[in-house]
Image 1 (tube, rainbow, N blue to C red):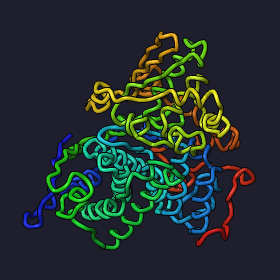
Image 2: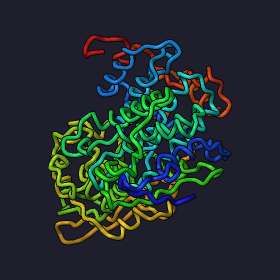
Image 3: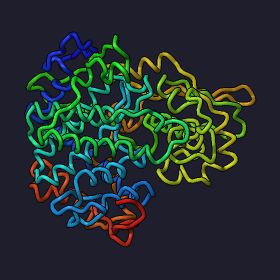
Length: 502
């Protein structure tokens, strides 16, 4: 890997194109490198994972609404929409919008945490949609997805957006644009312009994940994917972009991140080096914010040692800066302690999540979020006894550059009214590659079955799983069937409506 220094250049000091981060990203995207078997296997795992959570969310309101918008944009030879019949096709950017929302809705797919946060699986919907619309086979799709993951992960390693209250989709859009560039075999110049356009339009504030969190949390990455497709389309027609988008005097770094004196180090593969960043990412066994995964497993472990929850005086979770300030009491969000809060808000409250997991000894993507569960009096009492504090050791482990040494959990101290204590800690979730039970192909398929079994037919399940597991050899026609279909009678919003503008 090469480490690239990224800084702001005043207008009087020219920043050579080959020194610009967007050009370096484009160079990686246009570099046709070898692909190892373990990387192929992980791409397949992540396509299965995305499909499982998308189908489980298919009839939730935000997903159904996004699907309605896509259905209003039919296109012969376009892309498929999760749940809809394979023979019905829609414009790629709208298919990516609908599918990206479905994947993100339950907050249940893969993650990568470093200087910032990310869900690299959000790259799959836009890249797949373009592959379907432009008739690309499995080998090209595989290459495009690996670029999306590679760029996304390495931007997250090098540039912190959260520090400046910018939403993490600002790294997703350029990654998806680069991945589409690889998929289509575009020139370095075209990808360079596409990446810059995508960066320029994708910067948003983190209010989407603060306070009263709404359905936009699911829409945000889908919107980034849609923006990426549109950016590439414009640049394929010869259009340019604001440049240099990262290093310019009025660039995103200068005015949205660390300012004119800002400096970042972004790692990227050298020419000819294999794209392996997807192997550093990890999926979720539980439908909740990733920093809660290990703490859910820890709560289940601690449950058996507690005889009476009413005997608990207080619970303190010692954890990283990110966990404390984003989903803990360090956020200062009263909504995170509100029994009337939305699912999206509860998903970002480690106090709520730990209380329910401690009482139930498990986590469920539906049952753990129902209003009845959130408003249960004994749960509310326990919930309001929980607080978080930042522990410098956990922050240091969270940011460890060695992926094998990163830790995302915490130490929990439960103090009882008689003064006794129960203390335990867990660094990584059971499903993490370094965890007690790392996810393998069988686990991804088991998750798929749990989430989709009540919704799709056995024949459809077998068809999709057999197809996706042959990804590198799929023809263009087979890639167009890389979708999970739901019987229409089980799918709401399966026809064009007149509720909105489209």
